[in-house]
Image (cartoon, rainbow over all chains, first blue to last red; front, side, top):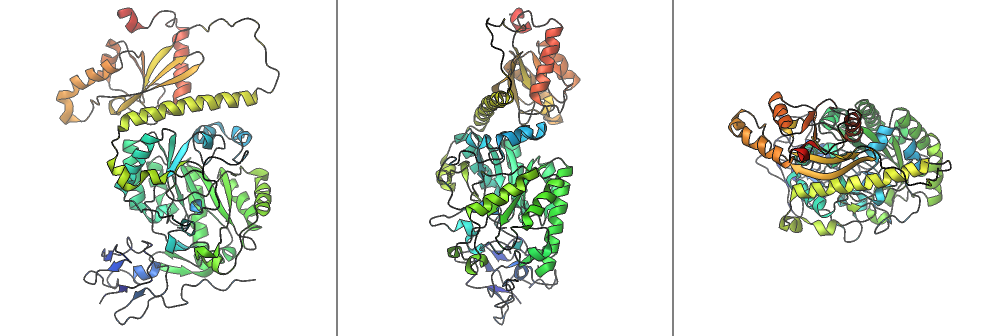
Length: 81
Length: 498
């Protein structure tokens, strides 16, 4: 059970220090998740921390390839007024 | 965070392009005297200072814990996306090394800031490790940080512990309905919070953090990004509130929303303000607030005088190859700073001399009392804040009736290293005394009875009665007392001995 960072990650570093198991690896072209370390945070937090702070939609996926932040989920709401 | 301090518009390449662009000289003169002293060599806060002093930012804080609609994290920060611009993310150790290298090459360096590209306090380990290294190795540099404020209340004590005396908080609104149009989400208590609730939390943390900093005497500047149609009218209220709470400077900056940066505002056609709109708002906010107008919206890794960027001279590779005498460099900085501040003080005094000046027809008689050389145990040279035994160096000053002149620093053969060093204490103290042989007075915050006796025997009078006072007035007071007790008619004691 491990999450995965896929292309589209902008290497913003936000997730790195939040991971309770130091599973995020600084890498090029984009950061990676060490599958041996990642627990999807089930043992530590209510929600996977990397996905909870990731600013880019669709780049953190579960084992089935389902994005934790699907398209549209992080978009700002339409302008009021 | 997308610290607007890192935004970079069409800034002039070097130097100050505008004639009158700062928190004006007059405004600074009107600031509380202690604030004036603290901002006088800070290029970002003083219109005068930015022509004389340099600053640098170290990019140790890449992570951000909120999203702003004017930021695209793909480029660290929207304003990092100018062609050819790449910022290196530094470790704390690399940042300390780079700072020491820059501060050795540019003696005008007075301020080290951490302003992203993310948020300084979303990267607390990196930020505070950098501050720790620099307060150890370059204690004369002022430290400052820039934050979105979300984590501020949690770190105010730590900020105070490191003697960070300038904090910039980006506050774009105090109304969560307006905030919801600027911040789509924040990361809070291990989860993502969106919408109005996100702004409520952010705003309350910012305001609480502002109050806590002010309560601890830390200077707070507020940055606001002016977004036409969203917060432009509201910023007048923001200005009023943050000032009432004790922020000493409000810096209203224009939104940068070039679509090429890929920000939400850029892509949705949100325009930035015109120069006229910006100036009009700054003028309105200036009614009862010191406004900052010389902001260059620097990069998060800017190096040099405000408006110039010498970052390319100090890449990691180049810094690695540099040989630096840290102590000598600090001495040069302190001496230069003292000289510039003396010049600025003269200019300030001249501005206040509004009435007709008395013209001296006769050459004034030389003021009575000779110059007295003093050693000062002080971390920065500004305040007598160091125990004699803990001082790693002493500031040497010469005091006359006319004022205090800095002569540089001298290393201490630090003798009070704890029990283990005691066997050596005798020799190290003797070495320190020898290096201070031309001084008559030792100003320090405290001193043990043993070294007290040895200093006196060497003709150096210890004085711990001005602990935590500013160096210059304390030194003048000591000089005045010596004059009044008739000690300044003769040659210094050590010369008489010789």
